[in-house]
Image (cartoon, rainbow, N blue to C red; front, side):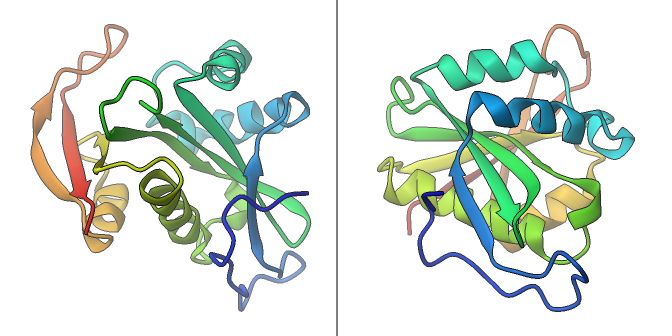
Length: 173
């Protein structure tokens, strides 16, 4: 397994049988069943719009997106999708980040988030990383704010979901 995020791993104190370093690599077609399983968890599903195998297959095949898969201690831990790589004009979107339920609460979500943001800036040369979040998703908003993102207005949600979304951005330091 090739770790695409070198130097961004951590020992996970308190993570019982899953202790080990966080490893992030390119997602393969064989990983997609786990990705759909992670996002079908009621906690994740509540915040996501369109999901499922078709969504992941399209993201994996799209040259404008990068689908990354995270493992910890040799176990599947989550995934993240970056978008705007080919057509974003230097603005990369952190489109989706999902952590498997058994890995939540140990700092892995923050580690995966940092790895994705670092990858957008370093590997893809982004000038700005942006994301959208539901305004009432306080846990996610708190993470994003603590990692240097700032609120930058409201945008309409996707057609299948009428909620407005909070746009958050972080510029290259």
